[in-house]
Length: 246
Image (cartoon, one colour):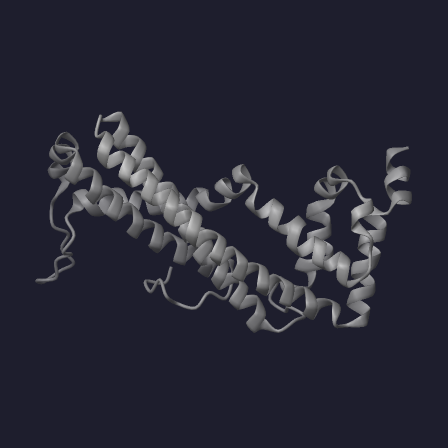
């Protein structure tokens, strides 16, 4: 795992590494907020406020009572991929795939996707994405310009970082409410929601721009465009839907 959170994102693993470091940083700030606002919690965490030594006179400047909970949150994010769970729960990735990528693919290959029901599109979403999109942008040998793919991954990493940071501070606000620190909890919650409402849509719009650029690059090749069109015909045309239903 790279120690530099600003290392360029070139694949899913490097994106997860960046998310880990920034989620840990968000959790560190949340722990500071909780310890400052809740003396009983601060007293408990002071028990592990030892200095971490790396040999010689090298001592980590952050006490363990701050660092260890923050790293635990970062590791939980890395292991359980909290951004993926949040995306599924909120329908973020699902709606992006359908409203942006699938819609743009269908428009570019002149397939009337509006004649398919929302239920059919949801049912075949993963197969459409796998065959008409990821087949060309995924793997070690993508068929479109790598810069488009890397830039899209980089933008998505910042979106997920923002989403997980919002999750961390919403959790912190709930802890503050539970401990009767209502004023600080309300300020934390409202500030978090306001920043998320401003920042996340902006980054998502940039993700949309690069997703459309990738779609444009995919269908620029006539053979790929025919394959994309055939994918839609096989999965979403009225004949194929009726045939499967029968």
